[in-house]
Image (cartoon, rainbow, N blue to C red; front, side):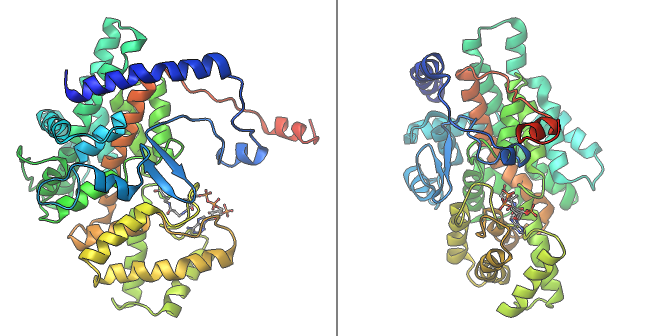
Length: 435
Ligand code: CMX
């Protein structure tokens, strides 16, 4: 049994009585009332999901297992000679709640390497898809194609106790996480680099190997590590996390759950916003002939977008009410590594110009930038200019958090999800209107 498996088993056994006691003794305690506004309005603010992997405070932003982003980056074991920690060590933290030792981290690095070889049929499938397929559709298809590999399905069909569900689920997750960089890099090189595929390097950690297979030199390996960590988890209610949890609640396996999660992430109001931001900026750049607009010119572009009925991508959030610390972490990276980059200057100007405009418009509850406002700039700077691909990078990260949640959902025996719906007539009746 690996160090990760042993620690997780211990943590799960210690945790189970807490969930059991809450259910047994306090199941009727109210957490939330649901208003008509919430029922029609996307269940905003309804407290009806439980996760201990991360928590999103509206004013502070995300904490992973209780650690802020700066604390997380500081506490985790670093890749030698690099600024950023091992993604694998971060995954150990998400799963167990403990900052791993060097030994625990390196063991998981090796575990990922052992499991990273993608079956050939996945590449054959990707090659058979039309080249103009969106990379997110390709990524999702590749993952669901591997469903036949599921250890959970085999164990379930053979018959197993509910208490053991989490173990083959962990197996599936490790197998899948380890392959995501190779699949994503294949999609990139196949689609945009004439199929000039770069073989995986077994000496490298997850972030390092991804940068290598993408064909982008240092410090892109650190960009990849930072990116995967920042995008991993944002508690449970966002579309991708909730989709993964919902699908897995039917005991669909990890491959089905992560593929479904990606399909939700691919929407422009969610993960695809990073693509939208770069498309928007490129549009402005074209109109400006490449020069950075003045503040007044930029304001006009933003108002034009709003007045044409579109959202300003990369701004606003359903929960956050301040600048997203994931934005700040990437901004700090830009200030250090690419302060003079023209696209960074655009993003910087947008940071100044957009929030007061959204406040003046008076609709968005949060005028501040989210993670997607900043992430494409870094990718573009290091040569990844095919912005359709950006959400795939988000997806690799998000699979880490969603997968960790699914393992814990199984360990704690969370049931199939099934909220109740009502009809419009019932709402009218509730407010004393027509029956
Ligand atoms: N630009 C223009 N209008 C915006 C806006 C923005 N950036 N953010 C919110 N609004 C509008 C909403 O469209 C809504 O308008 P209507 O009343 O006409 O429907 C109104 O303000 C109220 O919305 P809200 O309660 O503040 O925001 P929601 O919780 O409904 O939606 C989000 C949150 C992120 C979808 C929204 O802010 C948005 O569309 N932002 C731009 C897209 C984006 O960056 N998405 C990525 C979010 C992070 C992620 O998931 O990756």
